[in-house]
Length: 163
Image 1 (cartoon, rainbow, N blue to C red):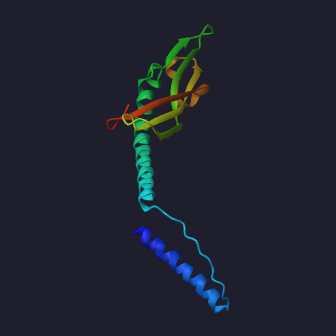
Image 2: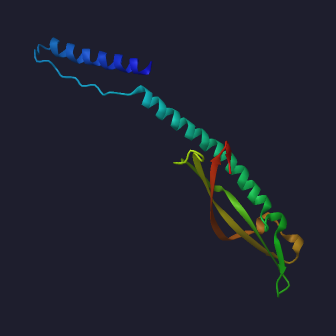
Image 3: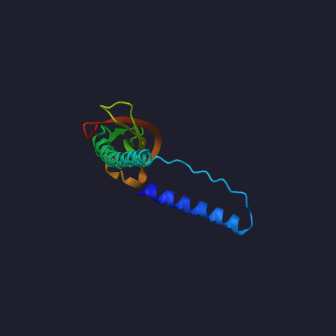
């Protein structure tokens, strides 16, 4: 259907060019060339791009849940922060947290028929610390980022599931 519309469009354009030159009194014919478009190949390319875009959306949802899981299960998460008493009597608290705003995803096709897609999650893990006079005094506002650790995880799409 689309190829028919394209041919009609170019045919009308060619007639317009030819008729305008005849109306202007020119007798030399104007040569018009057409680009050959393979509608099947164009449709296949469109479907492949749509499939890749769909897999990217699926992977983004998977990545968000994976980052939440990593945050929750980290040995030094906010709920399991390390609190140590310093020599001066104050307390130092340290915990790790993934910066959600730093998360990036990338999906690409693979050459394998078994694993058709590969996805990469990149993010920054922050190490936060604070000091206080008692362990109970720690609140969200007192922590500062002291270190940033870049992370990258590679996943494969196999049998309809990201792994």
